[in-house]
Image (cartoon, rainbow, N blue to C red; front, side, top):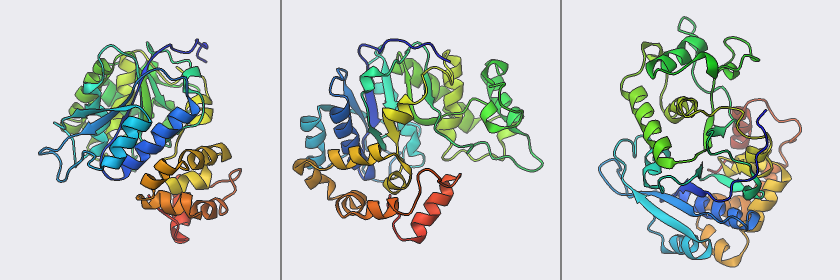
Length: 335
């Protein structure tokens, strides 16, 4: 277990903000941050991809009401960046390329935009010398083929490719060839002392895996998993790991990576629903969020509570897909 450190004094928070769904999720994130962590003194930085050859449409936020709400109501700052390597074909690459415009040498925490802050983030004892990321994940990658290489061979091929010590990354309390034995994160949050160092390495590893993968990965899907394949290698290289934060804070009492609003109502703690409905309720916020159908129907029209009534949070299905399928069958699935 990690030793408990005092909370870090100042750090920046970064999320991706772009047109479509993410602009409304950014409002919910910013509103929850201000409501639940009023003592946060860092900057809230919105990584905004700009139009260019990697995008078929216009990824930046044109909605004046949304921009005004984020900047003037919640004190967020837009940081535009150019998509040079990913873009439309792999939008998860925004969290990799966007790190290049964050202030160099300033500690940061990146959150996926579909996250709510539910407690005082300033009390989290981040050790920015030891990076880490979200452990709220399932064994989504690699996909083991009947006659193909196993977990160990696949992960070791990646560590070998980048000259990293594979053995020290293993959780030896877990059985051989069980996915939890191998360093694997969800990219819903991650942090480090310098976004440029982290981002440069993240980009280097992601591009190398995409463009020149080890032969053990020949049958492995890379979309949408590329960021989560590269992320543990980056964290391991920079001296971090799976035990860098006390359990139960991020992805616990302090933050919730809900991913989809329908899933939030199905499985999250009552506290998360209360935060969502509270921060969405002020008139100016509500007026803007009404333009986003999932919030309009699930939050303001009460359909979320109908989803909530379908599930026993103390006895949820073991696999997330089973929850999704039931919500879809009942006609309440909204992203």
